[in-house]
Amino acid sequence: MMNLIGYLKTGPTALHSGGWRHPEATLDDIFDPVRYEHMAQTLEAAKFDGAFFADLFGVADTYKGLEMFIRSGGQNSYLDPLTVLPIMARVTTRLGLGVTISTSFHNAFHIARSLASIDMLSKGRVAWNVVTSTSELEAANAGLDGLPPHGERYDRADEVLEACSALWNTWDDDPFIFDKRRGVFGDTDKVHYADYQGKWVKSRGPLPTPRSPQGHPVIMQAGSSDRGREFAARWAEVVFTRQGSRAEMVAFYEDMKRQVVEAGRDPISCKILPGVTPILGETDSIARERADYLDSLQHSEYDLAYASLSVGADLSKHQTLEEVSNVRGNQGTRGRTDELSQFAEKSGVTLAEAAAKRSRGGSLVGTPESVADELQDMFESGACDGFVIMPTTFPGSHEQFCRSVVPELQRRGVFRKEYSASTLRGNLLS
Image (spheres, rainbow, N blue to C red):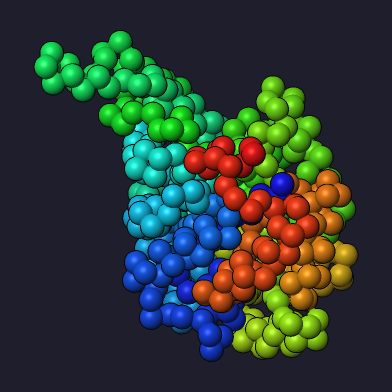
């Protein structure tokens, strides 16, 4: 069975810059808990494995300061996703719930305790989308003078994951006795110190929070650089990726699975999920009209601002990969930069022009049946284990996909009709 995870933001838009301007997009509920409760219930009713919140540790200002990400409705995260997960967990029983947290700016003990607490309250349904962060603005918000080098950030991330793993394992299963008559609350022999110490990270433990039903949160990761793939092969149970073509998807899939095996893990334990953006219509022509209308709402300069954030340089000033490399320092997402530069080279355009052409991100435009055809073909051809479904408008995109494409996938026998496990890890592996 393919895996499906919903992409979410605590803001007005996901990836398509015109989505928030659509007449059916809701905006006045961004700060209303009902918005997030409704989406969680919608995805759970469709039997999605989970949903996760992308996040940025600040407000982007790489391109022309704050203007584009405030005035043009950028991908801002107005709420800390950690505060939203419990709201969604309260109204669901099976849907996995993921949050993005950077290993470069957060203390390992704090990460381990926060995620373990929500994992316990949700009965084992939390995921951690691990990022190392890619912008100086985030470093400044964390009180750092600059962003550490790419490789060093991943080395630190390894230590943070090692420390968190040690902390999550400071409790054995079934530690509580709750014997009022004897006055024995818990079994001391089942709680241990972590005593972790690395080059950048150390933590004594034990964690105050016991083990959840799934043991520890599911680990997600989205790095596509060589070092990012090495990190994912060691730690990731879900890899979120964006690839430009079917051939690139297959190549990425085969490379990641090979590296997972070389890291001593079962390849089944690591799910490769490319992001796709379905735009649906009753007919192919209606779907195309809807896509064209959405595109007419795009803010081309915002798309340039978002791409500038991704590559770590202002693309209105720096047009070539060489120029970008000379000015960005330690900033930028290596995988996104490679994707744009390869597309620019193939198309004979600048990086800025490539950003405008690639802004929508893996769009599948068509009827529910034709979109299901594409998803099934990619899944069964060995290009992926499932998909991260990225919306254009809220709440309609996810609602429409759940209402029309999911039943078609279920009818074909490639997606579950019922959950088979109570934890996120259990459903990912079932």
